[in-house]
Amino acid sequence: MTQYELLADCLRRLNAGGLEYMVTGSMASNFWGMPRSTHDVDLVVRLDAAAVPVVIEAFHEGFFLQPDAVRSALRPPFQFNAIDERSPFKVDFWVLRDDAFERNMFSRRRRVEVRGQPAWMAAPEDVILHKLRWNQQTPSERQLSDAAGIVAVQGQTLDRDYMTHWAAQLGVSDTLNDLLTGKIKPKNT
Image 1 (cartoon, rainbow, N blue to C red):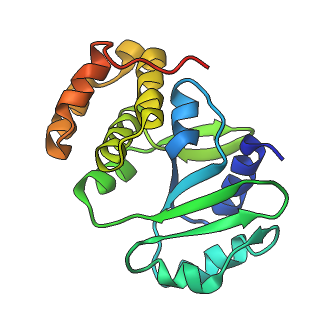
Image 2 (image 1 turned 180 degrees about the vertical axis):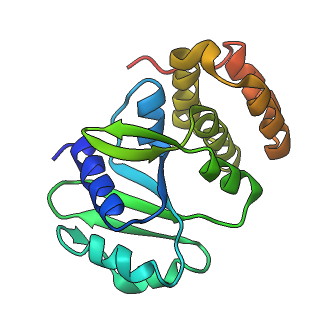
């Protein structure tokens, strides 16, 4: 199973369960930018007590998923994972938190198609900002390269005013400027 087959399988399960979600992380940056290998799928889910058994049921077959971890995700650190038993990949689930940027990001997600499955994908501007936010917390050339890859592919279609506004809120304005002026470039692999 490839990472894209795994993503399509996850989308099918989430959609069938009627769960609210969005694809983020490297799979979202691959969709909008320059693809690279990854060993996980990152998903943000709207999770409340009623959705917990739906998630457990949706991912019980073919995944190692600890039900207690899903229930515990309703409180910090607001995340759990499912390990695919058919591949070396895992799925990281991040619970939508009460954070202004994350709520806004979730409201801007876009309906797309991935391997024949309808999907809710984080918007390219939000993926860039999210990568810059992660880089601020844990500096990583990979985060910056992913963001630069989205800028390289999406170019002038990006809403720069939107990104500038949120970059100021998130404290990443200088890094965004470096991205938009080409000082930070995608890694050539």
